[in-house]
Length: 100
Picture 1: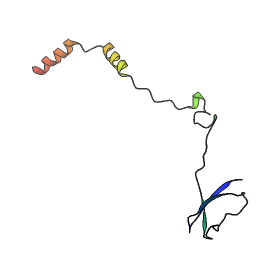
Picture 2 (picture 1 turned 180 degrees about the horizontal axis):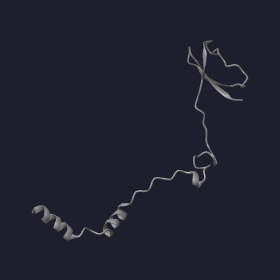
Picture 3 (picture 1 turned 180 degrees about the vertical axis):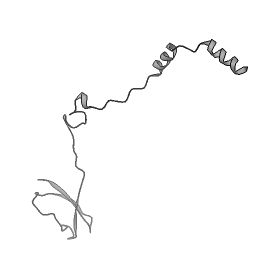
Picture 4 (picture 1 turned 30 degrees about the vertical axis):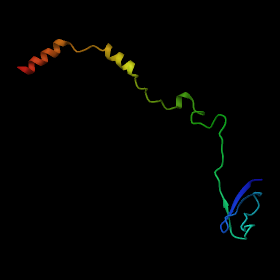
């Protein structure tokens, strides 16, 4: 049987009681005879096992491709060293053309 929490609107008395699903909610405070309200709490849910995560029921073909990883600074520096530098003659010829 589930346990329900009640609180009195008039005197503030709070208590828990086990009731069947078919039982009517309590409306009268046992302490002062005032009006009761049912308190609602969050339900503790724990997902265990497979099938609860987005990737559990998907095959590799239907998954979205991940964003390409950024290049590490070491790899970026290595790729800059391996790329050819502009020819000094080309740089010098463009400087003399603009001077003249």
